[in-house]
Amino acid sequence: MPVTDKTRADERRTAVRVPVDLEVDYACDDNFLFAYITDISILGIFVRTTRPEPPGTRLTLKFTPPGGDP
Image 1 (cartoon, rainbow, N blue to C red):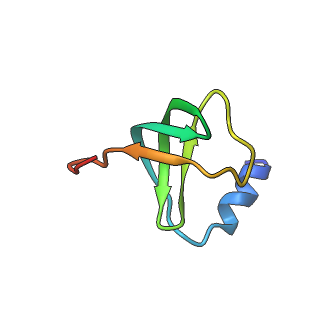
Image 2 (image 1 turned 90 degrees about the horizontal axis):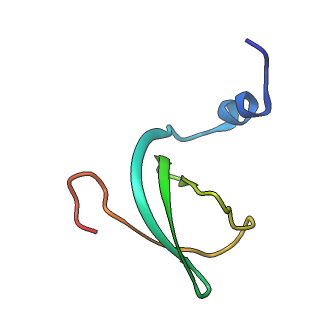
């Protein structure tokens, strides 16, 4: 298998990432958007969206974990 940037990033991870499929509403400034969380770990989450915000952007997320309250 060829070594890619993703492969190198996966090798540097210190926390296990768990694949999930969660709908998420998020707000950034005055924008309210909808996206999906596709993986999660103790250190963070990956939000899949058609218009990613720049790195370092503060977001307010609203989602319901499996079996949980929003």
